[in-house]
Amino acid sequence: MGNWIINHGLTSFILVVWMGINIFLFVWFYFFYDLGDQFFYTRHILGSALAWARAPAAVLNFNCLLILLPVCRNLLSLLRGSFVCCGRTMRKQLDKNLSFHKLVAYMIGLMTAVHMIAHLLNVEWYNNSRQGVYDKLSTALSNLEDSDNTTYLNPIRTTDIIPTYFVFTTIAGLTGVIITLCLILIITSSMEVIRRSYFEVFWYTHHLFVIFFAGLVFHGAGRIVRSQNMDTIPPHNFTFCKDRSDDWGRIPECPIPQFRGGFPQTWMWVIGPMVLYLCERLLRFIRYMQAVRYRKIVMRPSKVLELQLVKNGFTMEVGQYVFLNCPAISQLEWHPFTMTSAPEEDFFSVHIRSAGDWTNKLISIMEHLGSKCEILRRDWVLMGVDGPFGTASEDVFDYEVAMLVGAGIGVTPFASILKSIWYKFKESNPKLRTRKIYFYWLCRETHAFEWFADLLQVLEKEMDERGMGDFLTYNLYLTGWDQNLTNAVTVRFDEDTDVVTGLKQKTHYGRPIWDKEFEKVRKENPTSVVGTFLCGPEALAKVLEKKCAKYSDVDPRKTKFYFNKENF
Image (cartoon, rainbow, N blue to C red):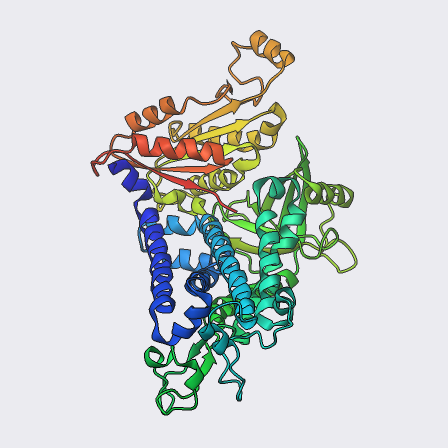
């Protein structure tokens, strides 16, 4: 239990607070509409569906306020920088922005469904009441004439209207249909299988959020849900007058009841986040317009493209990422890539693996460009760069001991870290707090190691020359091989260097036994705080997260593992 609290305590507390606010808003507004005197006559027509429609609306307002904040990347980077003086646990929460974004989206989807179903029932009951299907009081309420838009209660004003026509011809109904359709498209296209296989579909449908929020702002302008005006003189006492509808307006005790629509409130909830997000997009556009120069274009093995770029005023930290846009492919698509360069270098680089239509087109274009190094003009291939943005890997040097785990192209943030370490040793940087790094790289094919092996060879040589061979322990795991490789390994097994990488450290075949690795790290660092960093698949993240909890000691004087994962 103590290990779980170390790694998940603050996250769970934030989720409990978020869920608590949702529950409070739902319960509060449910009883507000279910028990409020001003809604007595409205409830007589609609029953409990009134409260079931309005309570989810309150929860929707709260979550629509939150949904844009986790994707304001510049805001998150600013907050991450302001938390430098605070604990690493607080900064870790910012790295879970996309998980929280999805959670809020699920809540919006659920509450939209409840809200929509309840209002569809309300329209049906309004229509039946207008037709005189229900009791005498419901009919009397529905027949109230409109006097300066203050008297009527039932928004369906005629007896010959079709409910479907009413839904599509009112502000609330039409915007509700548009909002719901947008939400369905956004949520369905966000499924993992769609995002992985058809990223463009996900990207374009996600921009329906603009229509979603526009509809949301105007949704309440129709003021469909109406309540009794309790401030009229003389007052209309519903407890006395509800059984005397024939006498309304004829006796002083029962004047004709007055009703009014509720003031639209959704815009007040979402206007702040909308302005923040607008500023975010404006900043991205300004960055997009800044000139970028190609320093070097290199095709690595396994169809990996390395772009070395230069941009005036660009500064970065280890492990950060940028968004790239190539207008020659698409004006709107932006894709995230972790930088593989070090902050000490005078350029920034990314390694891009062929993994879809956009990356394939980019690689094809860059192969034709070759190694041109002129400043980009508008008549040939522009490259828009937005960033850099902070990630969990920024905190790697805050730990005494670090475990870096990369899977495939997921090694990119650790390339930046290892390069930066090399520069720090070269410059004898006294601020380097980290004293031990364990590096694990898992790949399916041998060619994937080639572009990164050169860096490891330089580091290996540098550490040996400084007598610090124990500073970096790296383990390369090949998870896929053929018979030819097996034969080569068998023949050259006794050589000093590895057959695949040319490094002194031999490549392992298969997958790591993580219990053995964590036990080893804990044994070698009995009193250290160990940061475990992953850039890789979700399945591996779950395994490592469990191991961090399992091998962390509750005693603050002993080894503790903190799990960190890259999220884009």
